[in-house]
Image (cartoon, rainbow, N blue to C red):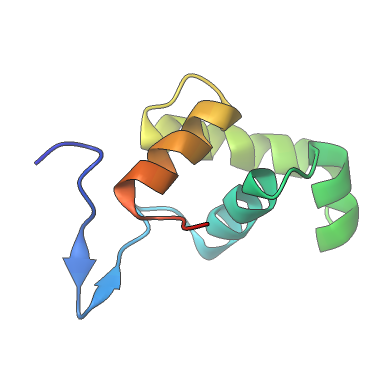
Length: 80
């Protein structure tokens, strides 16, 4: 199985080990929000967003947050 292959469990695509908050942040990144906008939207600090982004990038094996979105779209973790 490749990283880009979606994992199905009970008819739903698993989120590749992402927490609910990381998944939420990844969706907001996909929708074009900056880290500052995400922080304001979720009521958390900019630094907390950046920590989550770093975790997302690491878990998906991406080189940056844009690459993480591309991987997530290809894997079926996110959809347009």
